[in-house]
Length: 127
Image (tube, rainbow, N blue to C red):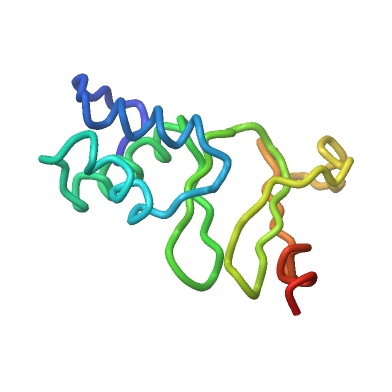
């Protein structure tokens, strides 16, 4: 899809964007759908999927491919680091104090997206 393409206004797309921008849970499409179907009963899961991917292609949100499980979405489009719990699956933003230290390369770097994995503090305390 051409990221320069403009799309007509959609109330459903606007609500999807608003939800992702205003949450820190890094939701899946299913999570967005479950939340918004209460507010917009006519919304379909397919509409949520299409709009999340469209918003990510336009750079309005980030799509996080975690390697296993469903893609997650992040309303914070600035370069930052994530932590994914291997036990419960939650994804957290973390401060790794390395936001601008890019490797020396001949490539033009436009962003940095790092995801650490392990066990979150909640799961550690419950085990």
